[in-house]
Image (cartoon, rainbow, N blue to C red):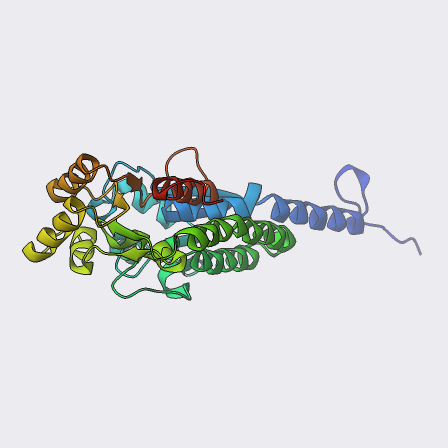
Length: 300
């Protein structure tokens, strides 16, 4: 009795065809690119560093000239979120507009990372958790795990890139420790709360009334007595440096800068959004260097 062997395309036996199909599926899985949407560009940068060529990252807030508290979403933002595999937001009331966009385009398979919820170190009434180095490390760990769940074939790559990222945070901590060793207790002024995540670990003494900082951070006018005290501290040269948020400027904060310069007090600008052409690490290090120089030198 003759047996008939079944053949597939180009004369290949069906078992061989099946092996080819399995191999092709594996290659497709390996080459798949995950879509990541970050509310803020510093989170997008971290995702890009960890995901490498396995991710395509869109950062919604990327302009350091725009006040993040006044951001208005667009149709393009909604379209990007609708197809995202992973979404990263800050949370804590900072970017509530993201939650509205996500609710408008539900997607069961989409993963969500909320930086504020993951951060081990949170200051009262202060949602700017990305200025805390340990907080960023926790977010990076979550990004690596989420990407690995979405693309298990590349889990080893994501883990390796995350290890590199975690090590790259060490110079930031070292710079802060250097400033603390030389300038602990130095009095400084802040126009808003964002930099408290770094003045605290560095041991700098913030004299500006918290009510002034908080009001500016929320886009409100500070209480009159807080404004008077802030101006008095500057004019009497009670602070060594004035650190201001370039993205939440107002007539009051501009006057504080002018007064500081008139009094010969160094003024250092910081931003909420990462400037173009920088990484999270280079951004933090540059600002710390500017603060260190304003305090009086290299600190060596």
